[in-house]
Length: 340
Image 1 (cartoon, one colour):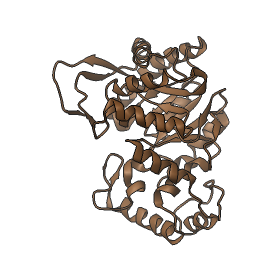
Image 2 (cartoon, helix red, strand yellow):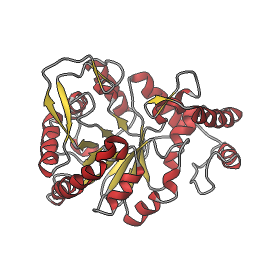
Image 3 (cartoon, one colour):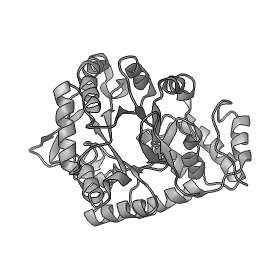
């Protein structure tokens, strides 16, 4: 299976069905050298990946800098890049070996700012770090109650009254081609749809082989609005890549027992058909017609090669049928075309 290009919602953008999640080249969980980051990006390019997603948060600017340095060597028309707004990077006087999972990223301090001016400043700062003439997709990052807790209502008011207005202005002025939200919560995306017109949503970890809740209400809203979907975190922070092993991670923490039990059942079905669990996990979201791309984080060449292998694996139709029969997938979940 070669990587196909898919249109993103009703936009004019087409993205590769497997994208490059650039958090790891910002030293997520482990330090990566400039040379390793460049080699990984080049291998992804050679494999046909043409959609690259980054953010100021990833390495506190390091991911954008490394990605931009690489993409500046490629024809601008040949790739799509998304970055995010909602945090301003301010100089940090102290040095910290690890900040929010990013190793050696202590020169800057991320500060939430969803105001009109904050979004505009974040956009300009990202353009400077990337060194590109434009950012194709601009995403409002990490709005939602899971991130902001009791401050969610006020944060959302500022984001919709100020931040959305700035993003819409950038779209109307054709400084970006599409705007959306990048979040771990589909609920906040649905809430935002009541307040503005969005082109797409990058939903991390919420439509996977383990979770399909957006099928019932959120995806129908997106279909009606013509909004495209990109799926991040297809392995639910690791557990769908490792299986239910000791220390398995789910949603950036230790997996609870109910999640471990469900993954064991899914894995048992995969094993019965001779299919690696992560192959099924990577291919499942792509079956939904709204999903244009799935972007696993790639921490080096080995992980890239594994992801590409999983994307190309033949999976028999019977595996998906068995998952539905055992109640591990909802009856209305679109399924990949099985190949014997």
